Length: 260
Image (cartoon, rainbow, N blue to C red; front, top):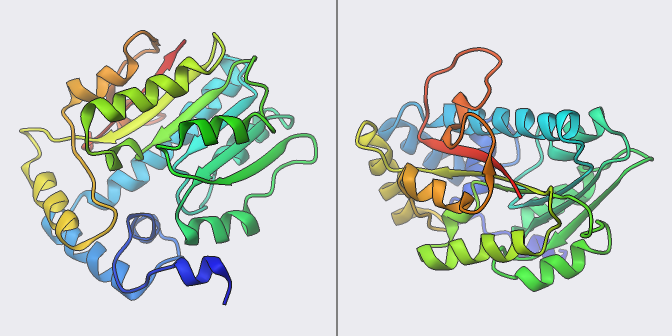
């Protein structure tokens, strides 16, 4: 067995694999499907969150490539590859776009190396690192990306795994401080909301049985990640409400795009 295979724990459900299950993927195990079904019983709309977040990624990346001229993307917390990954959306608009993916889940890395192949004109790289390893991430990303030019920092559903509020804000600030003016932050985050109490029950179940544990924050707390940035319209909203192509119900996953 390879080192990556030895690191894959199939005895406990894992968030990346459950997310993959909810979005119709096949890179998951019975333990993930069982937990995913249980969470869906507690909160029937949870599968739609995963799909809504994925669609938000596509709209945000497409906007940045088409309208903002962004040609570099640093995607931390990649998750398992599925349809319309960051590099596919970006390179469809700009074949010379460069993308660096960062994740520390062994199953994600195993599939990333096999599936995330970019265009000949662009470049796609992968890094095994934790979100907290800011210096490591920036040093490795600089081998593929020109950090003196604008970069889109993609943090979709990943800062939820940093429990301490101030630590999570500091990580995002350090990453953005290292990027050039004109760079953008694209961030999504599970929220706690009085109108969606079943979300809290689903998160509590997950934190008892799954790995890694996640932290919910209020919509106002999510907006704080964009302090000092120019928020693109419509601001920090349900990811299904960020420039949708067709109207869709709000989900408890909030998102925004901000320009440095």
